[in-house]
Amino acid sequence: MMNRMPSVIAVKDVYVKSLLQILDMPKAIVTEEQEEQFATDLEVLYQRHSNVLIQMARGAFELREKVRTKTTTTTPKRN
Image (tube, rainbow, N blue to C red):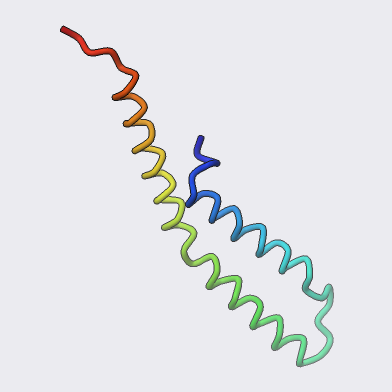
């Protein structure tokens, strides 16, 4: 259920994009230029992941709301 929440999908996309970026990085850093590019890439990764905790909290909130809505619509009323 949670894997269909928009915020959780956004987090998954962040991790997929980051993994692809890491796999595309050179296996060895030989030149100063490569070292600078690596540092820049790490900064981009760091910035990209800075919002993950908030996004997962949104996902938990979305799940809670969905469960509450589902519970209130399916729970029979007692007399």
